[in-house]
Image (cartoon, rainbow, N blue to C red; front, side, top):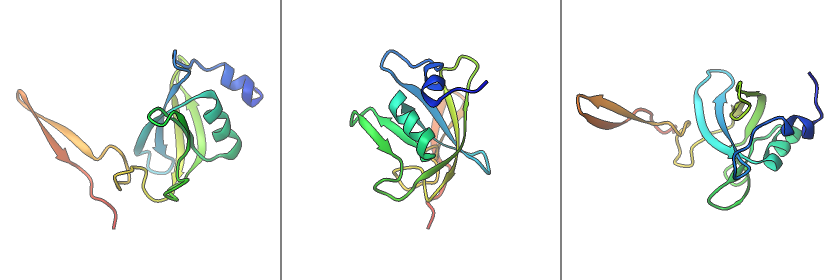
Length: 127
């Protein structure tokens, strides 16, 4: 099924705030790099430019990933789940994805030890 960009976007289910969650994954090794939110405008910009653009909830504006850091995400595929309410975006990551300097935002692990949970650093910052 083919759609124009706007038509495709209209088939997706955005939440009451007009946002849809996007899981960002490395296209080559399938590592989950981050989770972000998109609105219809940021998704359209992402599709047209093939550079990941998100909606920043804290700044209440569009955010081109890499605009200030140079750590762009070049979009290779956009998938959507069976309910059409979550995106899986495969990217070629330039530099690191995390604003704390890690390749992935998922650099901590909660290790369950009986009835306690130990927070463990499970990644190193690239040099």
